[in-house]
Image (cartoon, rainbow, N blue to C red; front, top):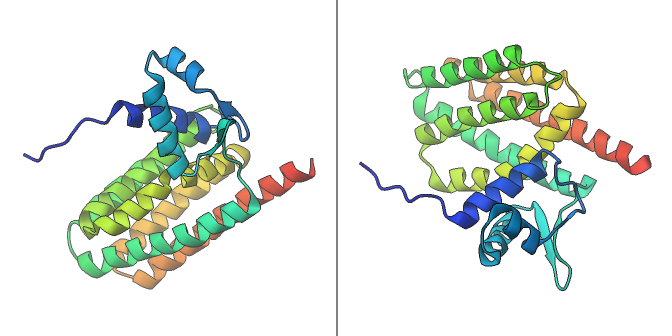
Length: 228
């Protein structure tokens, strides 16, 4: 049995606030007041302060002298920078997965989780308020399984560090392009088929195409908001 320490209070607070930022309940530019958060959650200001530092490292908030923490903005530049790195990291994960497990029955687990994403995408009401969250969470379950097979802690840590920021852009895209939920299911189907066939080039092409599609959706939304 391996030892797993429980998440710290600060991490729990960071996850709570982070989810509110991802779902745009806390909008870009909103100030996060330590005292109010501490009062609302019945925790110490010190724990809230530590949580905000965690969120700063995850690029969800910016902390300014005398002003405090503010929800960071999504900009054309920040989105491009994020996707430039994230797409390449995902391609690396996919290639390593195929290199290590091509022809192995363990890849069947990937297909099982891919089918779960497809089932959720078909079952959720695309007009429901939590439809995007359910699909995003199911998609990350596929990645968690891939981490276990690839066994590269550095790659896993790098991808997980980007998870809150990329979740935020996924949510924006799926909320504004409801057809994207169906497109996400198609992408994961292509992913599973490429992995099972051991075709690393096909897998990488699917990742790049979907990543670029998501990038352009988010950029179009940001440019529309800027011109409004």
